[in-house]
Length: 431
Image (cartoon, rainbow, N blue to C red; front, side, top):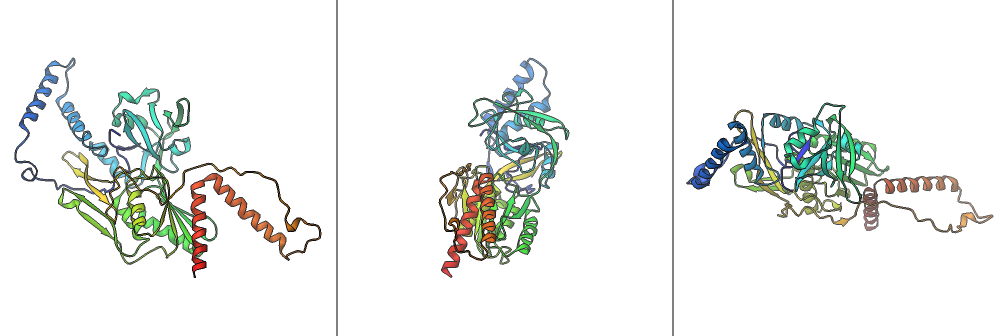
């Protein structure tokens, strides 16, 4: 991956582990007692050659702005230079409403790789998938575009269409997918009951109010029935605000470290710890992750795994273990700069490795194998009845059908529910 992760429809991406403003930077005395004069002379020489020899006259301000972009882009995939519009859109984006197609992307060898489509957005509805490679936008090759240009080309008026040419594993030829742009209002937290005993919460991204939204979702689930277990779904969640991830973990544990960061700025060394108040009762929890789970999602999964508060299921996560801080500049510009690495409570760095699940479950399609129907007691002529035989049979058939539907629709969630049921049974046997 060669450039900054960004979100189509906004100027920046979701993988922002910390959305904080900081004007504090290392002083020249702290960092370097002398300027690199030789390199500065070389820069001046290149600038002079461009001014005098380039085929067309160039604007000084544009050349210098391009130089700044290149300087930041050469650091790591997540640092970037924010011009006024991008800076403004970033702040709007973290509030949960923005325009675009709704995908988290990064540049990969000159092409655009989809990290994750965001739930209930045009990209999801059009069938864009994590891992897709975008090679063309409205027929124009992205090879000749910067990431900012690609983002700008995918943005547009709500209701207008953009055609993305996609390379996808398992497909013999490129796919052309038409996405209808929209103003995207992302719901951070969703909840429902999987059945009368087991709850399900999906966090699509970590926004400023995700902790509050989670509390409301848990209250709704707990009001509907006593919980025997809970699935927390973080699949294809590309991250977001660090403090939101801390709030989510704090809802599940009542003591200990959640995450800590280490960097060079005095403000970069931060440790977050749990409070005594817990929102989730002591019930089994399964956290679902996949390769689209990044940044804040990995903080949550890693902390719950280290505290042995949840079983992590699915496939390995994305592996983004760095913190980006917004450093304001003059003229409404800013840097989004990688300033720290974050670590799980046990001291694990997630950077490039990700979170590995306790139970590996690949996304799969389940097909029922039809075999010979065996004769049972109830099929025998003149068998003794059980009193409520018909009611029990209907109930069993309904449960079996619901399980089969879930298995075909979402195999990983089906396995998570099965694991929760097994843990509940084991708990009852132990008692």
